[in-house]
Length: 277
Image (cartoon, rainbow, N blue to C red; front, side, top):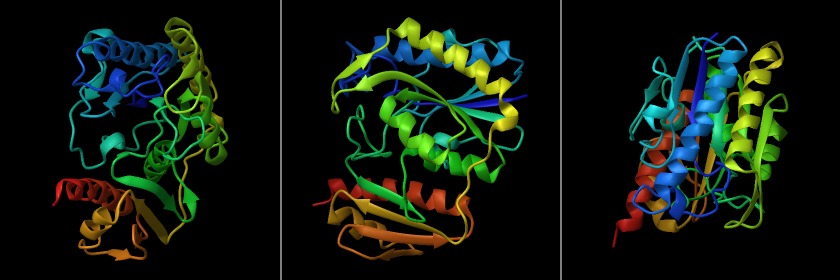
C-alpha cells in the first residue's frame, strides 16, 4: 500500500501567527518548520507501522520548500518547490491507496480558524464548486478522487476538521488545536500532537476499506470570489472564464483536472493584479 501526503503548515500544533509560517522570518519560522516536519514524520511512521509501504510527500506550504529532509526516512520521496501545475496535489496517481493531509487549515472566512485562507488570502475571498463552499482540503480531495485515491486522514484545528468532515465524513480527523479567532490557539503540545497523528495514521491505514474517493458531479462549476475587482479584471481575460459579478468569475468543465488547473492559473494571474497600478 502506497500513501500520498500533502503537507501544509498552518494547522501544525502551536502555530498561531503568519510570522511562524513565513520562510522569510529567521526567528520563529525555523522552529515551527521543524514541528511541521515532525508531524509529517509521525504520519509516515504511523502508516508504516500499520502496513503501508511507499510514501510520497508533497510539500504544500508557501514556497513549498519547508519540510526538513533529515526528519524523514531515507527511502521517502518528496516533491519540493513551487509553481507546480497541480500545486498541493502534484504527483497524485492511481498508485496510491490513501492520502493524508497534515497541517491543514480552515477555508477563508471561517469562524475560529487559525490563519484561515484558501490558497492566497490576498487574492481569493471565497471558492465554491457546484455550490459547495470549499476549503483547500475539499478542493484537493476532489483532485485525488479523479484518480480514485481517498483522503483518509486530515490534521489541523477543530474548524478545519469539522469543515472537511462535512464533505468527507469517513476521514480520521486529528485536532491539533482549538482556534481562538484567527491569531490565537489552545493547542496540544507538539509531542502530543505528533503522537495523535501517528496513532491516527495507523488507524487510517487499518480502516482503508472504509475510505471513499471524493468527487464533484459534472458539469463542474467553479466560482471564485476575489478579494478585489482588480483580480477579477485579470482573470476574466482567460478563455473559459466568465465574469458574473464585480469580484466573481465562473469556469465550467466536465473534467475536474481542467477545473483545478484553471483555478491554479486564476489565483496566480489574479495575484499579479495586486501589483498592477
